[in-house]
Image (tube, rainbow, N blue to C red):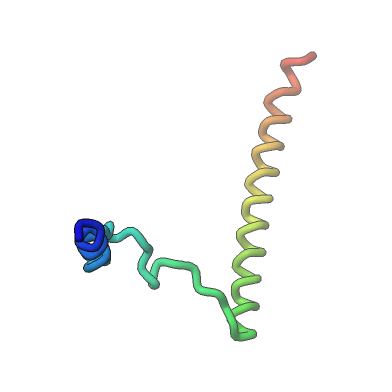
Length: 74
């Protein structure tokens, strides 16, 4: 009888007994996959703008590094 009681105790009400609150993210905070053509275009434009902004920032940093380092080596 003991193993059956053990299985019954640990097998019932598992959702409330062994759950961690707020473990899974809320649906509002997760990524949503765009399915409509306009949504896909908008997402591609957003990613392109983000990539170009990062590229511009990286180029500015490289230009700043080259200008500051030229006088030191000569």
